Image (tube, rainbow, N blue to C red; front, side, top):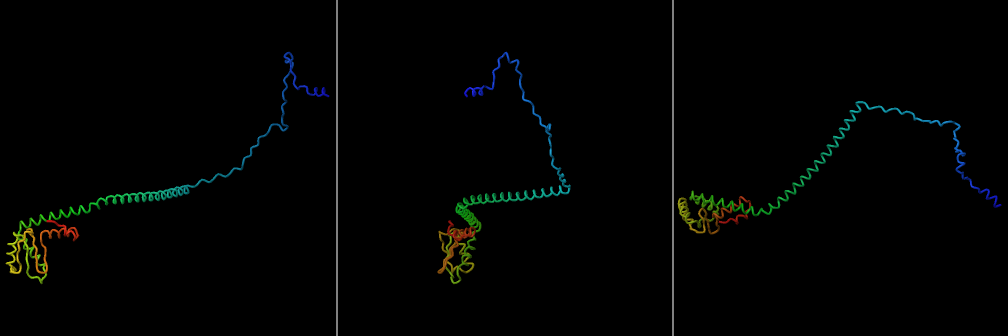
Length: 231
């Protein structure tokens, strides 16, 4: 049994000696050809589709106009929005600038007001002095204005004047016949060009200081400034 198996297991290859190699021929695989001959290439083409009709000149012009109009409207809208944003930004900047500028001016209001008051009083004082120097008779008009402010029931009293104005006042009263009703009192506290009229029931301050204070109050529009005038 074993010998039979060994015979069946004989090698499928055989070593050929070099001397016998020349007698060996190469074996080639025979070619295989289809019974139908060479294959035929079949190309299937789809049915030809009709070419689209090109737009007419009128359609092309209409499309161009529509595109131009849409582009113009879009650009116009975007331009307006951009301009509005720019305007709003500039308004905000302007408001901030005005607020920043207002704060220093608010702090300087009182100082400027005081300086303005001092300037007004200085100018008015110089004008009064010039009028008195060039026309001393101005004191008579001051006295008459003060007397008109006295109530009618108060007839007679004292007129306080600077010593250099007293003589002019006496002459004016003598001309009107009122020298017996009003006494002239030379008052060193009075400046030239001013007076103070005193009766039993009232008094009128027409001094230079009071008149300057009235001028300042009128110009500044604040009656409280009347008490801030200084000689």
